[in-house]
Amino acid sequence: MTAPAPLQHLPPDELEGVGEDTWLDVIHKMEEVYSKLVSDEVELEDKNAQLEQSQQFIFSLLSAMSDVLIACNQDGLIEETNAALCALVGRSEQALRGTPVLDLLADAQSVERWQLAKYHAASHEVAVVEINLFDALGQAVPVDMNCTPRHNSNGRQVGCVLVGRPLGELKRAYHQLREAHEALKLAQQQLLHSEKMASLGRLVAGVAHELNNPISFVLGNVHVLKRYGTRLTRYLQAIHQLDLSAPVQALRGELRIDHLLDDLPSLMEGTLEGAKRTADIVNGLKRFSTAGQEKVTEVELNAVVERAIHWIQKGTSPRFEIRWVRGADCFVNGNAGELLQVMMNLIQNASDAASSGAAKAPLLFISLERDPQSVHLRFADNGPGIAPEHLSRIFDPFFTTKSVGQGTGLGLSISYGIVEQHGGHLTCINLPQGGTLFTLSLPLRQSS
Ligand SMILES: Nc1ncnc2c1ncn2[C@@H]1O[C@H](COP(=O)(O)OP(=O)(O)OP(=O)(O)O)[C@@H](O)[C@H]1O
Ligand SMILES: [Mg+2]
Image (cartoon, rainbow, N blue to C red; front, side, top):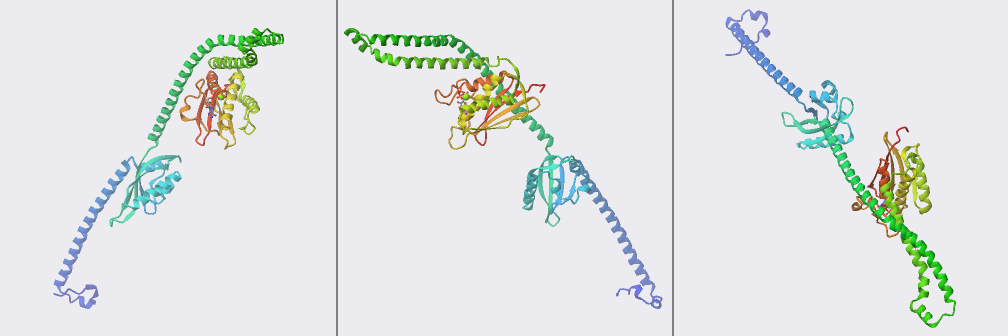
């Protein structure tokens, strides 16, 4: 059977001759087409409803996610985000769509990490990076991001998906915890150190007290002995001018009286010198344990620093350079003489240390910095620094690395006592670039 010719191609006179069967066929075909159309329409509506449902499902998932989400294309342009990201960055989904992910990154390091994550994603790897995003107020918020490659239905990579959790609060809390822990450790160390210095102070005060009397009468007697020695020498020299009998002459030789008379002055000088040095040490010990008992007045620190520099420079090599710029007046409550003593000792120590190596020109930087409560004087030298095993001992009385006669090891312990009595702190660290930094912190006089 041949198919009926299409009606519209038949001339009108020919239509008149078309048989009833042909018309029935046409009507039948039309019905078939119509019912196909209707069933297609129903199917389409079903599919539309399913699509809408799954879109709604995806939307509810994205909205419910507390993690931030960014889906971007191969050029790094944002295609999809979620409510958590919009809330974090303070921009709507429409505003974000089509913008580069780069625009959300807060610093160069985050940009570098994002590039690295994209590179990993291109090799079908999942990358975990910590990046900083700008939040709604323009501040950096750290986010722990997973970057995963995204593929189309053909399996071709079309971009990547970033999912992450803002670490802001957690990190801040962790940071605060760590700071509190460090402060606690420092306070504990300072407490231990103060206790150690306090018990040393008591011990030293006792020793100084016990030594004080004997040493003062040794010193007094040596002075008298020296005078007596001079007189006896004069007397014996006068006798030796006389015509002495043979037994006396023999005794003079046997007892080596001439040699003894020659030796006597240097023996007396040596004894006197030793007694004086011992008295100095005892005085130092007394100063260590009684520091802070001097008269307290208003002291301007710039002036004290300058006086200390002036006195030390008189006795040190001209090669030793001190860099110091006087700042605005800065007042503390204290004893100017004691504070001068502390600063002179710190500068003298710096000069000794910095001059010990011939290679570098010895240099000391002194700076004064204040905060609302305190003033911090810093003494940074370019010496060899302090051996790590010595750092915990340098404030102990008699700790010295200088040769005998060069240092008593009392300077820093006395300074420590003075500063503590002034309500301040004296601390010391080695600088990363070499050299030592002593920081002298004192409470500011509140009216200044
Ligand atoms: N700026 C510094 N650089 C390196 N080491 C230092 C510095 N200041 C102090 N020291 C070390 O600390 C030790 C103790 O110093 P301290 O001032 O108490 O005693 P000293 O200088 O040895 O003797 P003195 O009683 O004459 O002051 C020094 O011997 C030295 O080893
Ligand atoms: Mg010293």
